[in-house]
Length: 322
Ligand SMILES: CC(C)(COP(=O)(O)OP(=O)(O)OC[C@H]1O[C@@H](n2cnc3c(N)ncnc32)[C@H](O)[C@@H]1OP(=O)(O)O)[C@@H](O)C(=O)NCCC(=O)NCCS
Image (cartoon, rainbow, N blue to C red):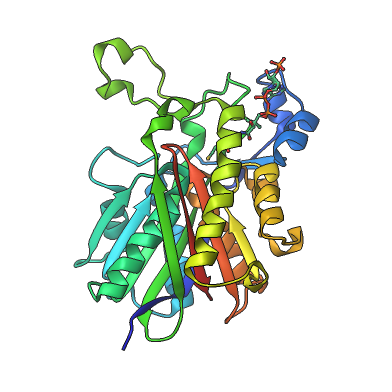
């Protein structure tokens, strides 16, 4: 019998504090109208000083476990996607495993920037298909606000904090139909976050903050996401009209609208969380997916396309029969 990975639970967490565009306009020379028109963002959440990627991941994970109706101890594998881990090591996955009081499972992190949750889903899918795991918890959890330079108006307007979770289980029915992940390290200089503590002597003075040539990233993102849509549809021998929902990475409404146009989809079929969450990097796709599952927009049997693009560059998609 062919094994497939099916979504059996999801969860999401957003920190309490809301930072509005007006709040940011008191820090840098910008305005609510500029930010909203260029990005689609109005507010974002900012983690409290005692919160971490692992603490937020735990809340999202517990929701997914509860929805699935399983015990945490049944999980075989935890994959956490994060670019803002609690510690260099142990991995946020291991910290989360301990928080969930799971004694025996494998836990690790993946680092693929904003594409992290798609990379995690792709790895989980391979583990389940091969029979190496039956139940896999994937998480995207980020405290972007601590990696942002709050004096740089070109980046600080964009990012927010949060965590999303999905629990996958092996089944013989359709679930994840295919995943597609790609990397091209040649674009490092367009979007990066230095790690000064382990940098070479010449890079020691760089600040550990997100640095981006937004305009150039924008152009590559639109073209690349167009190509991944074609690749995903061709692999599954599907037509654009077969997709019920698009769950995109939430970086910029104009990038998302371009992908929707490519799919000939109305924006009503796109799950958008950007306006009140900003770009939560690896958390964004899972947060949006969870929201639409919980509010009943995404229904069992529907075809859902998840996609993301991020630093590296990295990009990917997952096509799911929910
Ligand atoms: C960042 C982004 C919103 C900027 O929008 P843009 O339309 O490309 O704007 P530009 O960078 O070309 O800047 C246009 C002008 O606005 C100014 N500007 C930049 N940020 C500003 C801000 N927050 N408020 C007001 N003006 C701003 C620039 O200085 C520039 O001024 P100039 O024309 O006098 O030089 C957009 O490029 C973007 O979303 N890029 C992709 C981001 C992304 O996807 N990143 C992550 C991938 S995961």
